[in-house]
Length: 314
Image 1 (tube, rainbow, N blue to C red):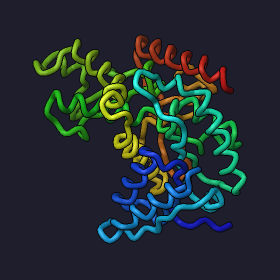
Image 2: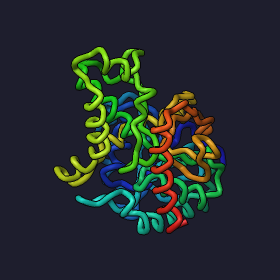
Image 3: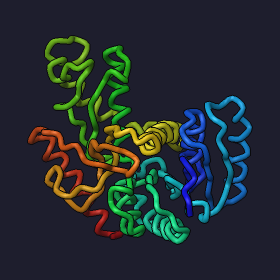
């Protein structure tokens, strides 16, 4: 079947799925958007609601609800379905139920004849990206998890607030698990091009001790939000949309997505958050930074924790 240009299907119309749809429509990055959910009426209602704002949007986008047959000619399918993280629960606690759900969804997507890029935005994202890849039979570069894109934007935001600069002028990455073992890579974090480890020596607004506090704040951000409003969705909605945009526009953007490691950072056969070049074919390549020994040890621990959980559902 011929592919319709820039067609995206979103599986799961909960808070995350609809936040992605809303962000995509406002940014005008697709021309056809299909919402798929086990609750067909919910998907239909969301599509109708989104269509009501189309006259004010960037593009005239065809938005509708549908079933898995719509995946046949989609460029990209975003999967958000699964049970949500509850207060006090880690992302890894969700694994068994969501792994089962992920397998069922991916089988239906592939049975429809899908031959595009899969983007996974369900938790625990690194584990479920592996499950999606394993189930789909797609090349590993065409299955992408949202990884640490959200953690990275949280890191940039916190530094920007501390130094009173535009967060887009802060560059750096969180790597590893999207979760409790994630690693803030300070050795490659800059503000306006100045390494942050140099900045803490010369700028009284930021100390080395505060970098540790910032990293902890970023790691625990989801728990803080979930305690207050039961779920997180706007941040991940915009982060996922950024990945979709990079694929559809063949941007070759460097984003910290959950990508398949094959000996990069001394790790293999795992998906986790690492800076990667994202283009129309998915992950073109992984950028291997010269991280410090301490950061490598932390990254190794993060991967080991993921591997232990993955082994229970592989």
